[in-house]
Structure formats: C-alpha cells, structure tokens
Length: 627
Image 1 (cartoon, rainbow, N blue to C red):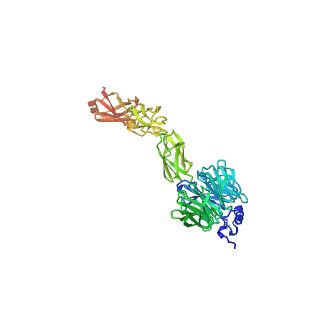
Image 2: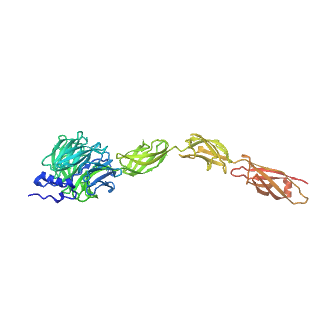
C-alpha cells in the first residue's frame, strides 16, 4: 500500500519550477514506493562572523518575501529589510564580512548585499534555478548549486573579484547544500534527488569522489567540522544524519534524528551538531564525540535552516511555516526568543555588524598628540584600530560596544579624517583638528612703564608664531611684531590706572595662560603745576579782596597738558576757589579772601590731588601788593 506523505512535507515553503515539481517527480521515481517527500532545501549556516554577538547581524533569506531580513541580536530588532530577486533560497557571507551573496532561484541570479549599508550593490547572472551558496575561506570564490539539465546538477564557480562565473562543475541531481573545507581544498555538495554527496577538488574544479549509501537518502543539508575532519549531512527521507570522514571520503556513521532533517549547523568548537527537523518541528542536538542525540528542542513550524552563533551561546532556526526565527540558548537547549521574519524564512548567514561612529570628543588637540579621544557609536566591540589622518592611534581601548577610547598620535597642524576599523571594516569616524600648542609668555622687558603707554617691550616665550593679538590687561597693544617663535616686540597701550596687568599673546591655537612671568606694571605719570605771581592792591580799611588765580598742569611723562583735572587754590588755610583745567591744562578761578589772610601769607598755593594714572602736584606763587 502506498504511503501517504505527511502533510507538512508538501508545504508553502516549497520552491517553484524544478525544485518543486521536477524534483518531487524525480525523487519519487528514484525512491519508489516509499513515496519520497521533498523538503525545503537545507539552507546552510554560514560561519563568517567575528566574536561579539552584540556586534553581529543575522541575515535571513525570505523565500516568498523576495527579501533578506537583517536581524540584530543585540537589540532584538530588524536592522534592515533588503529587497532582492525572486525566491531567494540561499545566503552566505564573505569571510571578511563585507558582502552577503543571495541566490535568487526565480531570477537565476545572485544579489550582492553590502553588509555595511545593507543595500544591493550588484547582481551576478548564474545558471538556472540557483539554490545553495558558499564561500571559499579566502573569499576569492563563491560556489552556487543549480540545475543543469534533467537529472544533472551543477556548481557555478564565481570569481568574487570580477563577479563572473568562471566554471561550472557537474554534480549529482539537484544540489541542496554546499560546504567548503577550512583549507579551501574541497567543496562538498549534498545532491537531494541524486541521494549522493559530490566532492569537488577546488583546484581543478572536478568531482573526485561521490559518496552514497542506500540508507542515506535525499541529503538536504551539510556542515563541515571546524577542523575539517568530518562532514555532517542530513538525509531528509531517511530521517538520519551521515557523518563523513574527510580523510577517506566515506560515511563513518549514520545517526537517527528527527523526521525530515534539513538544515544542520555545528557549534564553534565542533562539539555539537544541531539538526532542524522539518517534519517534527524540532531541533536534534547531537554530541559529535559520541554521535548520539543528547537533546531535542521544540521549535516553530517547519524548521528549515539552522545557524550557530560564532560565540557558541546561541543557535538560530528559521521556521518556514510560521514566518519566525527561533532563538535557542545552547546552555539550556531551550527556545528563549521567537522573532518575526519575512514570508517563508529559508536560509541563514551571519556577519559582523558594520560599526558606526556618531560622535568624537574632543575634536581637537595639540600637534604633539597625546590627547585621549572618546569615540561613541554602535557595534564598536570589535574595534581593532583607529587612525588620525592615516596615522594609527595608540592605546585603543574598547570600553563596550558603544564606546572606544584612543590616544591621538602626533601630526602636523590641520584637520584630518579619523577612521575606525572593526570586524574587518573601516568606517569614517569624524574629523579631528590638530592645533599648534597655545603660546606661552615667559618674560617681559622692561616689565614696567608709565600709564600713558608707549613703552616698547620685548616678550619672550614659546609658540608665538602666528600671533593675532597681544593685550596688556584688557587693552590691546598699540602695535606688535612677531620677531620669531620665541620673541615679540610690542608697544604698551595707555592704561586708565597704575597697577600690574598680565600680558597675553593669542594665536590660532589659543591664548597664553597668565603666569607670574608675563606681568607688566603701569606706573602713574609724573605731573607739574605752574602758577604765576599775582599783583593786587588793597585800599585802607578794605576787609577782603577778590583774587583772580590760575595754574597750569602738565603730564611731564608725555609733555602734554592735562585737561579735566581739578585744581584747588588756597591762601594759607583758606580755600579761595577750585577750577578744572581746560584743553591747555590751565585752570582759572576768582574768589574772595580776607585781607588779613593775604597780608599774613603774601602767596597762594595751587594743588592737584592726582589720579589713578597721574601723580599729584603743587605749585606756589606770590601775592604782591602794589599801591
């Protein structure tokens, strides 16, 4: 009696054209009355990624969504959804993490995704109905399984530098999975309808061995051990896993697993294999040392692909019937998260997330270097280098996935580009301005002068070239000349008062810091009052007399008259009058004075009390009686 296939084996995740109709017919013919059933082909877990799960993205090919989902495990969110060709079946990330190749089964093409920008940057034409894809360890070639002719499959060899197919290697019927050994010398191809594994010599692009056993029917997925010693192949319709010894290219063991095993992945240390069982909605955990199943993990509907995170703590499983991704904690072998995906998630790969720097502080420093600069952003945990204008920084320290510190190296003055390299990719990190050191003033001679200004002084110091200003206190120098990087000649400006001020030099790099060595003392200008004798007549019996008094005040430092100064005129102890000097420095006033006071003193005194910038002065002159 003919067996009725499990309803889950014919499902929405089926591939169009050859993958669904032709392959099903061929598989049935080959497998006879057992009614072989066709799985969703095992999408391979691509191992290309670096260590920090917080700085990694998982790429999910959505077969019926015609897209690739970039999932960020650190945030548990979708970082991007990338439109690709029709019916994307396979995805693999280049060893340097820079590109993801996506095979489009309905478009006969490979979409090339830039993993930094998560955009398609190119399309490579390949043969009909491409499915699995894998990279050589050196990234020089990619291998794409496809249909060649009825009953014959092939592997297109892509030169990744030219993005062109350089060879096609005939293999068994309907390749479903491809893996390349760690040394790059061989590629293993699981041929589903052919129920065989083809071994390709990558140096000659020829099949050197075909591995097959009756109890290993319809191989649908494979994974190569990290040491290259074994290949683990899932056999969909035999419900088991073949362990191939690569030394002899023979099957060393066959291990029963769940129903409809499809995708398989290995832990980074090769200790465990994880098998997605499409017909059982489970993942079998195999201890590779004992070749026994040690755990079975329930997951979503129709698990197709499995991918072990390179840190060893997580396994991701696509559930094609549920449009979800199961996240398995390998320590407990339990599902700890379920992530929505695109329509019919089908294949998995992982790549380091592109680093991004959003801030750099401080953004300037001296040409001598030595400034500690903090870079902040996203996915910085894998940072390996920081450069300033192409010169490597020192003391690069990863604080966490969002913060890196680095010490700026010496560099000539000017603005330079800063870059950060993480996970094999270098990104712009902003700009940094190198500045000549701020000037210093270490001496001044003479270190004093009159408040009137005009004293020519010599400033000595460092980094004085390019000076744009010299100030005495708050007052700019009347003039200055940069004689050298260590000397400036400047003329002191006038000051409103006597006292000590700091002399500051300013350049584009900043202003000198005030110190005891830059101080200049303003002294009050000396002054002189001059008064002339006054002739007067006094009548008998006269008790008081009006005196017309005057005096002239001169700044003897400058030789100029002093205007606006108050002069007080006295006779003896009697104040006669006060007056303010005019533009010519002369003050004049008239006041009454007792005759007796005049006769007792026979003279008057003009007094100037001084000002913050002028010294006081006095003058006397006679009162001469006539008549």
